[in-house]
Length: 142
Ligand SMILES: [Zn+2]
Image 1 (cartoon, rainbow, N blue to C red):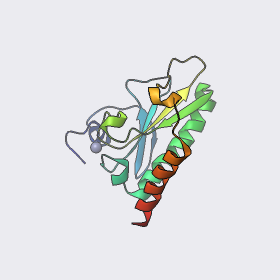
Image 2: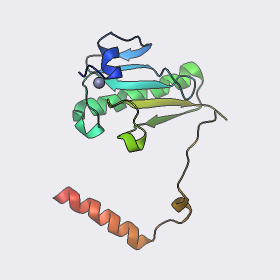
Image 3: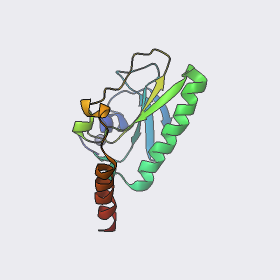
């Protein structure tokens, strides 16, 4: 646990949270600044900043719980879809330095969207894709 971590303070009971799920390794609670109605965060009790630093079993359990909560928001809140979102690193919009999975219920015209870079309209060639894929495959064998 980290003394300055907002989520660790919640896990220690030092800050309030509206819980939606709790077990030995995982807690889920309502986001205090929800993007949409019912936006929740699934948070391992173990403090780790990045996804790669979380124990693999705990990380997979986080995703399992997020999947269950995604089904529940469809049933209980009438969500028509759900986005699961991991902001892994500051450049990826990680705002709290404690790994978590966002469960974002989606509704028609809810105003949440994605912005794509200009390059999106000019997809790379097959040769470029093959080069990138080769680098990633190569790193797995190393
Ligand atoms: Zn923490």
